[in-house]
Amino acid sequence: MDIVDGAPTSGEYLTFTLGAEEYGIDILKVQEIRGYEAVTRIANAPAFIKGVINLRGVIVPIVDLRIKFNLGEPSYDQFTVVIILNIGKRVMGIVVDGVSDVIQLNADSLHPAPEFGSILDTRYLLGLGTVEERMIIMVDIERLMTSQEMALVETTAA
Image (cartoon, rainbow, N blue to C red; front, side, top):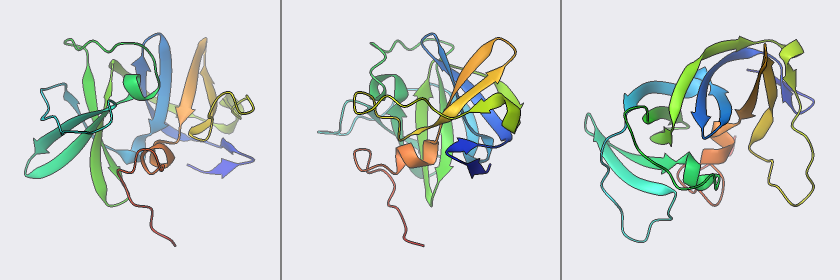
């Protein structure tokens, strides 16, 4: 995925839902998709960090994006999934309401994120994608997971 003038140019994205909204992340960051399972809570962790799971011998932190994005109280059912990501040199998971599909977006269907000034943090938004009648919020999942308030992945200076 390339970014030009603040908007992604093209690529394949995994789309998922949080409430009524649909989001997209770079498919190359996705390791696997799993059903939601109980997590081991970590004392004094922020509310959006649900805890950790043991994934084939790897301890994986699990982040609930509904809580992180202040989208209301999460509910966990048979459609709730965990998307396992490879970000930097870490493996982590994000809890979402459901996975939609994998889509191919080209530059014509991608638009820069609107400016909201200081009332809304848009640092993690790559832009908005349109597929037929669907509007997809494109998230820079690597930037979100390496952000200072998440502190789950150390950024490496290149």
